[in-house]
Image (cartoon, rainbow, N blue to C red; front, side, top):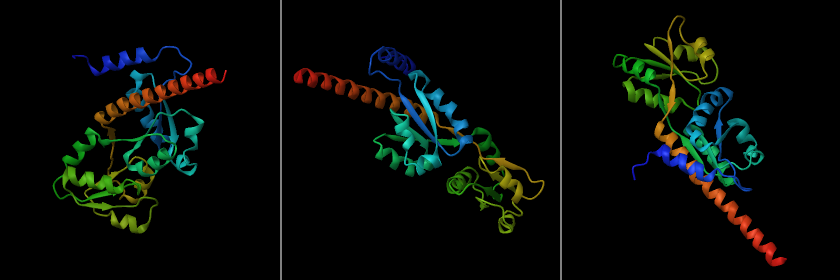
Length: 237
């Protein structure tokens, strides 16, 4: 009908944000592995759902799994759970047990990372230092971007064997939280490139639309439940 997405969302927000005893802001829980990840992605998530005036809470992945998502009950209601795709298996199972939908945030290499990898000569040997959780996906992306063979280094601690594996590489790439590990195993003086990710815009748009849908459905269920309770009390009275 000629309306932009933002105009539609703003109108829906105006219609649904009025006063009422059961009316609540939509609430999204982002599950991240460690404070650095939460600090990186929480502002992104807040901006993505800002048009809904949504509240975004950040929960640590390890605590979330160990406590079987108890923080979801502490922050009730949570209308939608978002997590990086790499962590989706465990997070989704917990979300299902709490009857909360879970969606994965898709990411892609940052433009500067793509440029650096694309500029490498064909056949260059790349040493990869990555946490075990990410190594397979990162290696596959690097191979797709530049067709170079990958030498997979350590994922947890520095060892002589790890250093030996990474000898004579033409370039070195590390993931988000492996600065110290890379410094310990990469040959002295070698330059190490951080493999940076950015959220996919289409994924953020999908999360925004899904949160709105889930929240409105949840809010409607709450209103219907309140109406039923009033009817029951009227009948009993």
